[in-house]
Length: 246
Image (cartoon, rainbow, N blue to C red):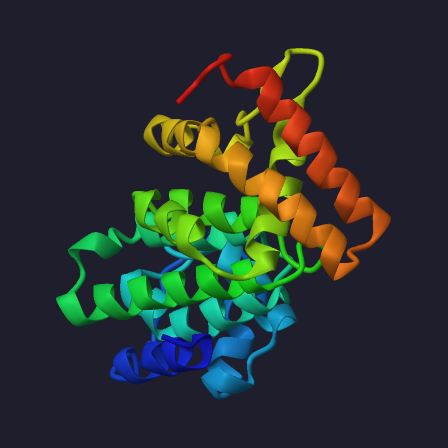
């Protein structure tokens, strides 16, 4: 499913929710900052500035699950565009806070479709424009099993998906410790997802893909920085993978 279709599905499925007349919130929250724009503007006209405060405080200290569902399509649309100042990991974590896996099946389905469409779109993008690390960790924050996303990364035909892989490994590398550092603060409390990422990366198939990708990158004429990412990522995996691994 294309990303545009997935976003349209969010708006369609959550269209039955309305802005509540009364919104409970902590006395330490500013009502105007939290929901002022939500009250005044149509949902699709809200911008990131309108929603940043609410995105950081939703459900926990401002409003309930129904308000969150009302705002969700626009929140996810703006997160995907990279417009929000509130980290995508925080916004996606609100899904877990709202126990979205207990929502009606149709609502769960459109959120899942959006996340997969976002992921596939990410893999098509140049790594200088979007970070796979941020997107993967956002999914972990939503409580997702990452195996389906990693499997699609395995199968994704776009050269940029391999470019993303090289950059990701270099970003994770801790030379002093001699290991991939997955101690992202947003991954605390998600040991299963950390292990999924680590196990997926530390495979001979990933090294082979990078070696082939490096040749393709040379043919494609990628810039020196991206080519260097390939060289460094390959060296990292040669260090980490046991000799003679199948």
